[in-house]
Image 1: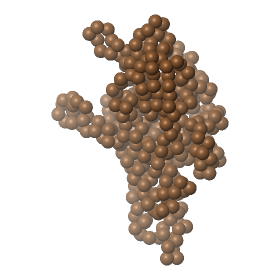
Image 2: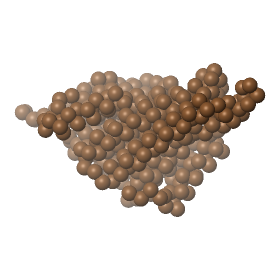
Image 3: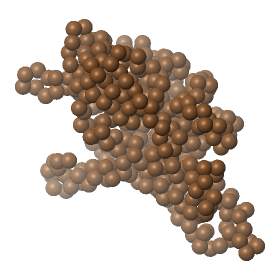
Image 4: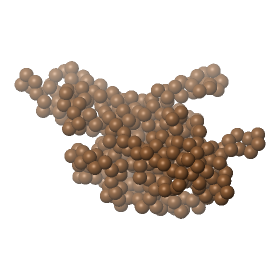
Length: 388
């Protein structure tokens, strides 16, 4: 794959970095967190105005027809600024799942409002027993006069606190002798029987728990064909995990920059502590981890472009595992090199570590993905399918 950015991609990257530097420095972010808003309306409008929400959406439905590389560039710059607006949950995860799962007519109706920022959807797929993975699904969709009734509870719904509607994965009963069909439904947030509970996360971002107690939706709430949810979720989660990995790489970059600057100005025994060889070695280890993580991100982008679905699934898990652990290491070392000040809320570096901790939990933690890779490797070596 070509690692050189186009002129348009450089402009996109620069526009996000300017936003972070001008409107989202650490003081502005601190004030933003104190407001308690899950999503700032002015910032979201800026995202839409700059085309970031539409960057990777199809042109036929109001998007700019970009690629996952555009998403990666935006996410990496937002990660450098620890931006807490729900770009990942609404503009990537929910939007890309919709792109993969809805019919062309549904996309024509729904996507323009997502691209211009006038509406926000959140993907409600994760359940307590699935631990961030798309399966198993216990939420049920029962046929009812005029539509379906939904029963179940979804956890860690990113962007779900003030979303207009939820894209919900639920199981439709199959015909006699047939398996149940996991499908997607678009459920307005104000539907009777829908109850959402805001969940503040450790890093200052927000999620929601959403319960469906017999919520009635019309027949046209079904997105795409019955039984196609897992393929659409796979597409959406691939994009979301790639964006999250890019965000963590951006956060690691900024952590190293902040730490290097601190080592230049902090003095002990009359000299900058950056002159101590032991600390230089630790900075070198952090830089090495960053480059390995960046290379894994590039490998994931290459796999998206070239590999089969099975090979891509393995690479997604490998990237989530490696980059999540690298981010926790690099950001943790940043705190260590700052000493006690790194543990305070008033100093920047600790907030990058908090984001790395939360990011590890999202979409299945590193241990879950590592176990999935181990099973896939064992299956390859033995020629047998290994049960979870």
